[in-house]
Length: 403
Image (tube, rainbow, N blue to C red):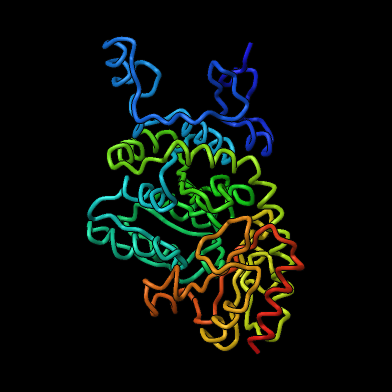
């Protein structure tokens, strides 16, 4: 007899991480395929009109429309749910669709958001530019102490939003402390966990209510497709998130979902390997005379290194550094690299580097960049799977030419 969906004796929630990444959510068709099937369909048919009526009423299990659900996408959602240890998961078309959906599904005019000042450019635009058009106000927290976060809370605060580590200077925020403050104020906590990945950090175990990812990054890991994921309680998904996303339409392609399922099979191997290389690179780059500062969560120079080591099992695949000489010196380094590619993407098998002030954080303006501590000489490096000696040699030779 072929294996289909889980049986009660399989207990996938109790599986180890690697088993979840490879087998979580698998649902085989009557053909017994080894690799997950791609269901490229926009709609579904019913045996009779009564069956259609029951499905739309929620009285019969089954799919009704591609925008509402798909078997391949459902497998991805269940695999990610198991990996995160969440009650529910919802897959969407991109990481920013996930961020937008997690916020917009629950906010209305008169509500207030508290957010860390350290934000990815598009997250910053949503919180400081788009949501204010709806009458949603915000307070950005510059400090790292409990008093800083308490002072930002208001009676109308509905959401506390943070990235940790942040993009691009890898600021680290205390998820447990912030969640405690938010919950006492009646707010939900949303964590952008893209840099840490679910391999290295589990925000929900520290009190976060909602976690989201750009699956375009480490989940795919090879720069092929877009995707996003929101993890939450079942109640949040069913009552707020699902109705909002179903009717606004950021639908994930079944093909993209299949690529992401394949990416998940090697996610832990890739993140672990790249994190090991990033740790070595952070140590070596910090010693170079042309470098002003290195930003890496597990590096001894990081101001929140103790917290980072408590929250994250490794330092992650991302590091940033300030080149002495500002933008001109940073650009000279970039143009002389022979292995590392210039790209604003991250989490790839190939090492990628970008200049945040002129790419990912250009549109937020110089004042916001100053608030975040993003200097004109800052470069963000996504460490891939190449030999670490080759990556270090590439950076060193580019710096020597730069000098």
